[in-house]
Length: 228
Image 1 (cartoon, helix red, strand yellow):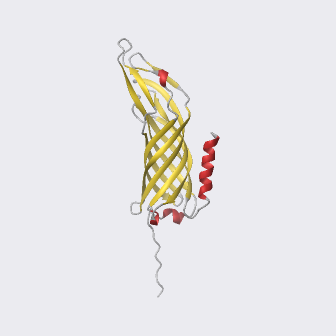
Image 2 (cartoon, one colour):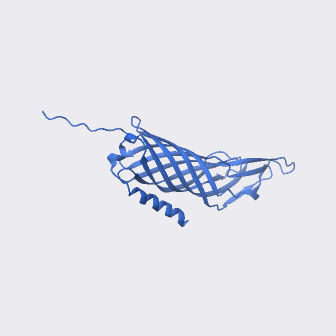
Image 3 (cartoon, helix red, strand yellow):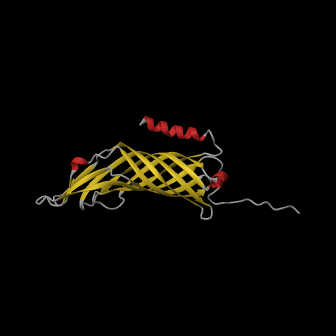
């Protein structure tokens, strides 16, 4: 775990080198997730996220920016309805998202897309139970350590240094496969590939000049009246 906190510290240190152009921020919020392929539906696994990041302009007028983060995120799957089976599977990741943002000054939004590298740091098995009518194979519940995801994001400025964003993430490659038997008496089986899917809602506190932060978002300009 120490290496990931070193990454967070390096991100903050890098922002102090060119403080006029690179903007640092801290982010915190919640994640709703599920695992595609487990025969369960709905984003019922809730968890927190926190991290740090930095934004750097790569086009004039702050219209296009590049973002990098280091986040600690909880993903996984949960179902307590008993249909077709119960499970509570928390997967704890350290994520490194790389994002390209386009800032729309008229709408006041920034739209982004990019890739995330996720490192599984802990996989505690809380609970799993099932009935004879629908049986998952519980011998293969260990997920891959490395997860590569595609993400999309909408980000807008709430007030000066404060931003709100919604991010959707989905694994590009399977992180596991699960085999199911629908009837214990007659065991026809099938196997599904599994993918992490999640939605994050976050608040971001950005450091630096709030007027500089709003450039490229709201496109505000100050006009001075001429003295007569």
